[in-house]
Length: 273
Image 1 (cartoon, rainbow, N blue to C red):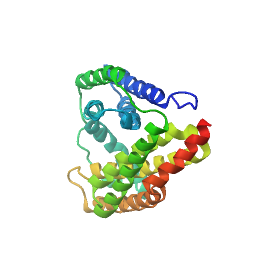
Image 2 (image 1 turned 135 degrees about the horizontal axis):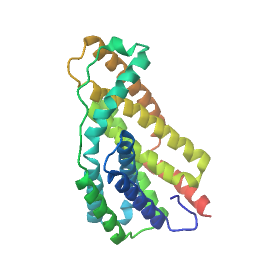
Image 3 (image 1 turned 60 degrees about the horizontal axis):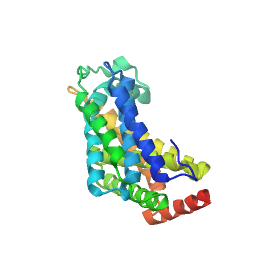
């Protein structure tokens, strides 16, 4: 569901949000979820929350908080499931990165997460979909999108500064979340000027890949009975990933939020005109 220069931005983004909620609900309602299903539900919910952030300037604070809370809580059970299932893949990535045979790492992973119940998540998603139909969006077009983009960019820029200063797994994980919101927002805004914005979206995507690998290594490092050598391998790769992430993030977030938003405002007016 892309934006159209001749149609209401608020209506298009609301349709996009509804489609993403329904996609997450349809997949999470399956009797048995594969690893791919879990990934797709989590991605759909992250994209839904990015869409909701684009509507935020036109919503009552109470409506935004309620809808955002439902989507966040619906996704919460999937985080530990995803982290448990990503452990073997992280081990394989670690071996590939260092050119080390997998058996040489001598790692015994804890059992992965077993069965899980997403009934509560499905109920929250149905409530979110129903509530969305009743939402009253007060603003439209750039008066809606502009302030939303500015806030999304500002939060990501602030998270970069915090991660760089604190250098903790928690700070980098928070930056990853904010970078994902920027990535999905840029993908929504790509029709404004495809060659330019597509490049920015790809940079944001690469940034989230660096930060995603860093997060997976942090989760992996919590496994018991780690050898000192393996700890060192993890630490050194995280240093590399964080260096790459900060370098790319500094480029992506180099503008002040007001300057970045004004630039997109010019794209918007040319596109609408």
